[in-house]
Image (cartoon, rainbow, N blue to C red; front, side, top):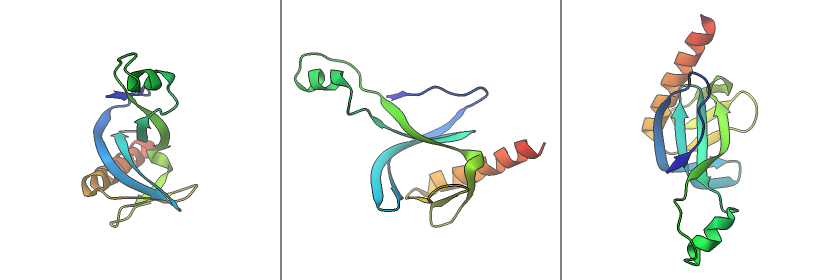
Length: 117
């Protein structure tokens, strides 16, 4: 389950679980949600005190993945065919999913066309 809010006129394109991402020396298996405005990185909140109760069987609740990082599509310079997001500011991000790569490219073009109008 996922827990995130959408911006005005934002629509979810697709959600990808178990995506490997890497930035510099940091790498992680994570969930990535692509919208028509942003790229969202989601994971479980390990600092949620209810999780200790859930593990100890003192309480049951549904765990939700929450956004821990987001990138506006307009802040992505381009995406290479070897699955690297080249950001206008900051370090590039590598990932390992061809479908996600193709969808990001498509949405970046849509954002650029909307901004040009």
